[in-house]
Image (cartoon, rainbow, N blue to C red; front, side):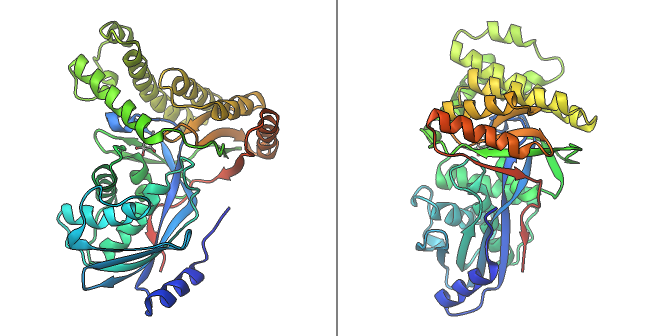
Length: 386
Ligand code: GLA
């Protein structure tokens, strides 16, 4: 697993800015066990935080200037707190500057800062490197300015940075898990009530194998926004606020709902939303009962729904998923926003190397780029390191 050398990072800070940092903060990437594309419709999700994190070494400045250096690509960016405005910055600095902007918009007074950032979260792999960057920066900036911001509030501030400053209409899942992740635990989260159930990852004798398909992300932002919009359109046609309401007690049956929609694409999107929310709840029950067979089946059913109804998979992703299931995983599915990225599988401990090799073979035969498999252990959320 790629790690970050904190001592070297602090040294870079001192060399670059000619002073010592005031602290070091970290926030993790994530995988989502199940509950995909449901967060922006008020639905259920069940992610856990990865050991891979983004680190922010930082010191406060009193002149309103922000300087941020990325140790990953060697770039440095400079801005002023007072001059920040939405969608004025491109690329990775937008996630950093967006946090200053969003904290301020939410009513927190923030000064400038010097920052050095380094991430061990694979980028563009659907493992939520954006939220890790936002939350590590956000925690650093909040603390440097003496603000004790509740974790879920900081997650919402980070979502606002991404929605409004960066311009990506994401839900709350990634920022939520970056803040609330806990070692050995998954978080079953209700995106409507914002209730977080932090439960032990009860998978005795099994592990989560992650396969980074390395498939190039295709049309990610545009397609994501399109899914978001289709859901909103379907909700409007059905006369409800969010599709999640279709999972409420007393809601009409799915087949009744589907007869009320003429558009086949909207019907498919709605079917995914309703069945996926149901699968999250059933996965929670299966894991609580230690029933890995059912949990695995639900994961594979989620994949089929994301492939056929939500249409966010690509051939590389489908091949990894099928290969993992055929080779003996309890179940497997795409994780994250889709159009590339990672597949996760629930796998018997001891089977991980064999299954990873099976995907490697299948990829070699198909002529795909070699995938990057690793075992993921539920890890800690955002925190101050030093
Ligand atoms: C991205 C978004 C999340 C969520 C997932 C799909 O990671 O940032 O809010 O919608 O896609 O589940």
